[in-house]
Image (cartoon, rainbow, N blue to C red; front, side, top):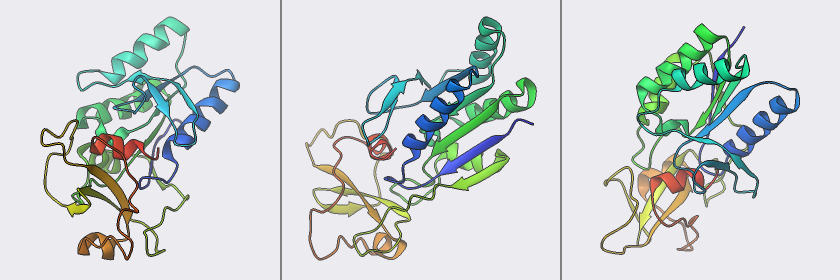
Amino acid sequence: MAVLRFSFGTMGSGKSTLALQIHHNLLERGLQGILCSQLDRSGGRVSSALGVSADAVEVGPRLDLFELALAVASRRGRIDYLVCDEAQFYRPEQIDQLARIVDDLGADVFAFGLLTSFQGELFEGTKRLLELADERVEVQVEARCWCGARATHNARLVDGVQVYDGKLFVVDDPEDHRVSYDLRCRRHWLAGDAGPVDGQAIVQQGSEVEAAQHVV
C-alpha cells in the first residue's frame, strides 16, 4: 500500500543526501518516478552538501503535482513514486496533491524538509505535511549546536547578530548586509547566543531558501 512519508530535520542533517539515495535505489530497481525540488542551490536539481546531485523537476508555486504525476503515468505507463526535496517550501495545496497521488495513483511519496524557519515557526508546507503524512520520520543524522548539544533550530544572522524578524525569503539584501545561518539548540536559539567564538556560523549568502539547502 502506497504511503506519504515526511522525513524532517535541521540544516546539516542530510535530507537531500537521503532523498538522492532513495531516488537512485528505486531507479536501479526499474521503478518509474519523479525527483522534485524547489529553490535548490543548483536550480532544477537536487544537490547535497556532500557534492552529489541529480536532475529534478523544479516545483514552482503554480505547478499541480497531481497533474504532473498523471502525465508521467500516461507517458511511461505507470508512476511508482515521487521524491520531493525542500518540501517545506511547497504550498499547502501542493501537499494535498501529494496525498492524492498516494491515494488515487497508488504511488509512494517521499517528502523531505525542515520543520521550522529561522523564526522558529512551522513552514506552511511542513504544517500540512505533518497533518496529512502517513509516516513522520525524523532524520537521524544529528546536527549539533556550537555547545555540542543536539541542534533543533535554524538561526539567521545578519552581520553576525541573530534576528527573529524579517522576510522568510531573502534573495538579495539591498543594504548589502551579510546574511548567514547557524544551527542552535533551543536554549541558545532563544538566547541568540553565538557562543564564545563569533563567526563559527554555517555561512550561506542569500536566503532562508539557501539556508535550508545548505544541508540538504
